[in-house]
Length: 89
Image (tube, rainbow, N blue to C red):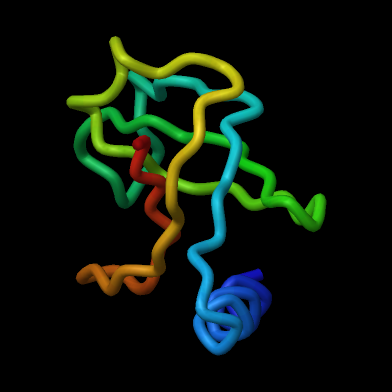
């Protein structure tokens, strides 16, 4: 799934555009599974080409999230590997 995001972002970069993602659904995970030690927020987002991705979002945005809001998606490296991170506009 990460390879798909990399290809979409690369294609958007060469087109000179920033790919906008729309928030379709979100959920706060309060009882994390191993290896996570703290709660986190998971979102389902979709771009203009109808490609859907699962991503994390910073908990500081939890009270500001609303369905249909736009944002950007980036792939970040963490200690346990790469994750998708949604940043609301």
